[in-house]
Amino acid sequence: MTIEPSRTHAPLDLLVIGGGVMGLFTAYQASRRQARVAVIEAGEIGDPMTASFGRTRSYRRDYLEAGYTRFADEAVRLWTEFETETGAEVLVRCGCMNIASRKITPDLENTYATLSTTVLNRLGIPVTSFDTEGIAARFPYLQADLGDLDPVGGLVDLRTVTATLQKSLAEAGVTVHERTSTTAIETGEGLVTVTTSAGTFTTRSLVITAGHGTNDVLKLLPGNQLQVPITKDRPSEARYYTPPAETRHLYTSDQMPVMAYLDTGIYLHPIVEGVLDAVKIGFYNPPDMPRGTTSINSVGDFVEQCLPGLLEAESTPVTDVDGCDYDLVADDDFVLGPVPGQPGVYVGVGWRGTGYKYAPWVGRVLAELACQEGTVYDVARFNPGRFVTP
Image 1 (spheres, rainbow, N blue to C red):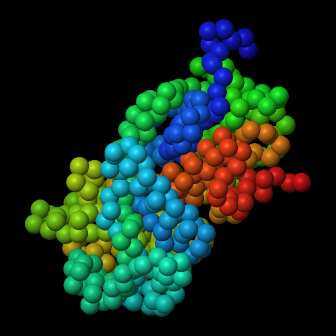
Image 2 (image 1 turned 180 degrees about the vertical axis):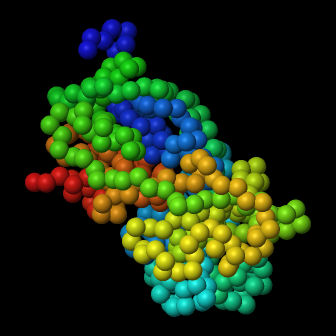
Image 3 (image 1 turned 60 degrees about the vertical axis):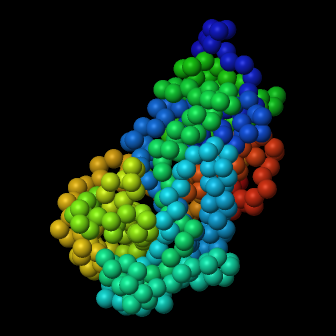
């Protein structure tokens, strides 16, 4: 393909292919290091039908594995740093509580709530625990016997994040090319040349954060052997519940935390004034949990058994990506690091449905790898090379 000279862009330190939240945070972190950066996006930034955009996502630190908890804790610090640097309020600090009910999961000691709290306590992260009586007193709308609340968790306001990143990148001189396809990539002599419908870019480093289009971009790399085994999934059901006016105050973010009953596949977000006008409840039966193991097989089952005050609430389905999209990786770990055999090329993908909360951390990791030849974080477990056969 012949490119007009006017379509050849000035040399870059970093080109990012994929303008979702991971790519935008990578560009943001790199621009803070005075790097010359551009972003290529096949669609449009902020498209509500894409996985990075919508209304809210939860941020939390409760995991069964300490590594993810530590990185989630660091992500909270970086979210707060982002707020300080930009002056934007992107976090709704309502807390995040894991719950359980004896009538649904009788062995409370082996529920996700108890097991994840054990990890948090082991790492010195404080959790406030409620028993049956404590829940009735503090959360009268909830029928449960165990509630473990991380007060640092809560919700991320996606629209504010997107707008703030776009504003910050524009102020830093980062150009975002929307509705732009990538057609060829060449490597050699310490540079990567990328041909797109917006022209040709020459860059020292290339970061690929193209979501489910990542493997298509990887195929453009000469001699590349990496293809990431990811599959797309989403919740079985997600619904908005609008409570009656007289009880609405019980379900707002100043009264209700984010809640999760992961043993049953349930998560819920409270009403956030100006952001989310209804309680959002999602049901996801993960591949590693046999169906029919609890009495919760739908959002309606959960409302009936745990939130009966919403039985008479107006209920409508979530029809866009606000219901969440999951990209599942074969070994259930992030894919984050250098592309094997491709100097100067890095990839981030496979966020397992839990990725948004990690976005500022992922962006920092990728920016450090691309601009500083290494990162301060130990991300060896996420090495993309694990999917390349020697």
